[in-house]
Length: 130
Image (tube, rainbow, N blue to C red; front, side, top):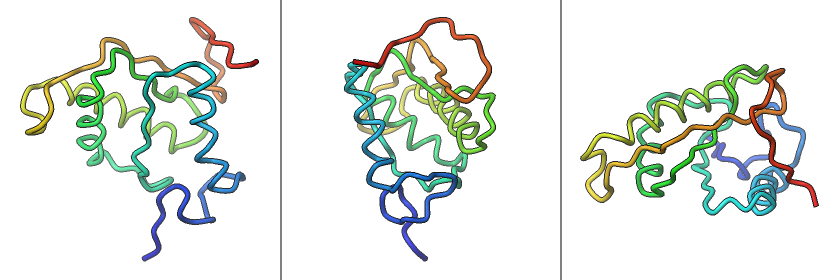
């Protein structure tokens, strides 16, 4: 079975960019808006499962972030809907103690939703331009 992690296969579901550009884009955006920490779990594109929430929950606990940014839940892209659900569930699961032997319980204080595909009215906007 081929490895389908982002960047490992030129056949990315629903994406027109080459894998190397697709992986570089979020890093560039994170630097522009001065995000202190950003992580990518290299989960399979278009095949997210809720069982993965524990992996994400452990990363959230270890990062001890105060804010989690998730894709907006109303979108035409099913992968973004699943990513939103997975992220919200992982933020909740990260809260109880003893989630993982080497991490403390930590639940983000806020979850923010970002979208460029939805018709949602934003509550605030961050200019990521020059």
